[in-house]
Length: 285
Image (cartoon, rainbow, N blue to C red; front, side, top):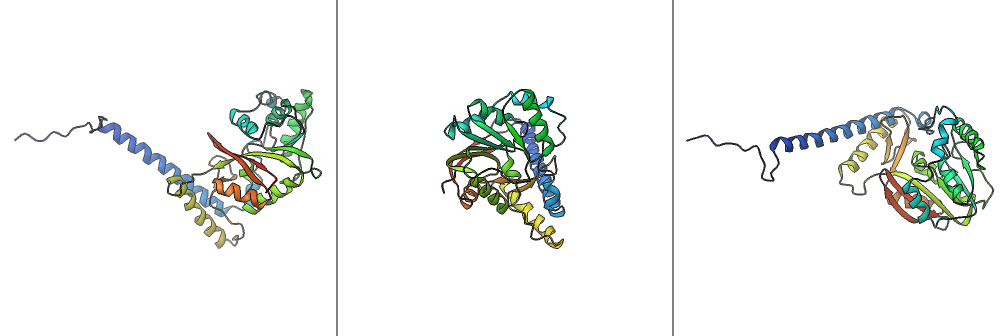
């Protein structure tokens, strides 16, 4: 009897080699995420918050000067930012504040919409570069550099606030974020709008990525505890950037809503874009 021939093609019509390649690629992707998770857990456990906080000006540290900022300023809103602005009711007048103003792109975009704009940037070097570039273009926007997390201004100053891309995620610790929002609330008018984006994580706790976030937290906290740094607690959603030594927090929607509520805000709009989520909030809890 002739031996049975084993087909190299599956019932779905895909060659066996293609199916194996697909499985190998998925496995490699999972291993890569797992290694990143373990590295993140290890170094969040071994390095103190204060060291990471020196890097929260990422990715702007070392900007080479005002000339490099001019092209970026001219770009205006990105599509998702325009969506957020429209979801906030597209305020066309009044005074606006950009927190984490960076190179000034969002501030210039808000100014073009008719708002009187101030900016704050916690990296003093970048704030100087940006202010110089604005003055070079005769754009009437002031960018200053207060102490980290400080939100200067008189009570009831601003009608709108735009927190620069992802900056809210770079604030480590729920209590720190709530205190930041509370200080922000002090400078807002009662009918003001706050717009910000953040890194997100899967809502489904059974997803592989959600599991990986839960894996790194107890490892990091165990390392901190044995080092006597247990008070610097790592939360589920905290992560270490794989390319730059900076903390950022990945939120699920309920965390955003809870932290806003804790600071006297209420979320009015939510959405997502390619790299994260966004929220519009009101200082009316």
